[in-house]
Length: 145
Image: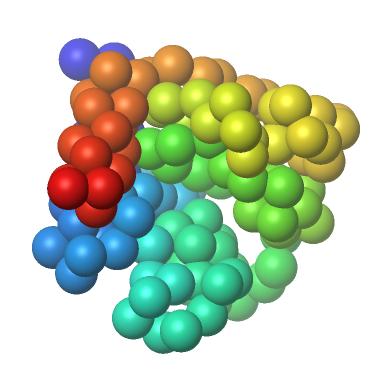
């Protein structure tokens, strides 16, 4: 198992927490020097807050842990490609590395705002893509009945 897979598994555990709360199953973790310093999962329904995405929760927790807003020495692992809002936050935090699982063809930042991230941010996609995509598809299939 690669390091990226190890931390993506942790993000998947966060996505499971969202699923258990009937939230869209997206999870995220922020890692610095081999330590998870921020965790988050989608909480938009629970908090009645459209900005309460997994990435936003994890970034906020990591910044709080570090006592600063810049995450240039950190990596964010998220189960699904970030939206434009989250990509903006990732850009403002100057994140060192972004790793995501499943692509989001409709709302993902790669299609809508590919330059939103900081120029030095390393992007890795497709880590545990199938698992993340299946979790999302199953969730929405259940919603449609």
